[in-house]
Image (cartoon, rainbow, N blue to C red):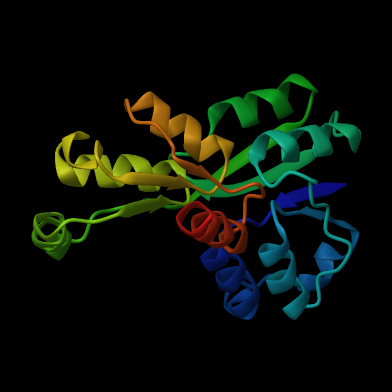
Length: 196
């Protein structure tokens, strides 16, 4: 059994659109179990003909880890494509069950040059809300702004508890937390916060 966690769009697109160039026969995936963190990832996998994807009820790595452990992964090989900033606890949890985890760092978050100037202009005008969809967006914006001072009087909206934890670790408080870790749920939570 081969478990794979496709939770990054660019990786899915790269694998499925470039399999021929890579010399990879996608039929080899027929016996693999594929895992994803949420419904959007699942829908994009379905476009490539991937069905029966394992998806946790709560859309985060902790719940995905628990789901994979229930799949009896001892001695199994797990390919984990993810960010270089990925949660080490997730890998440790899988390895503690006897799984062989191979991580592939498929992307890293970088701050574009023009972002510094743009963020200065935006914060000069004032903002009402900052939305965060991952821990890396928290760290990226805090780094860009040179600290948390400009965010202290701004409503903070988080896509889920993992992102909210990152907000707390940098010294801020989340005002809005999406009940489900999806962009749609985050948008609804923001609407509710401002309209009651």
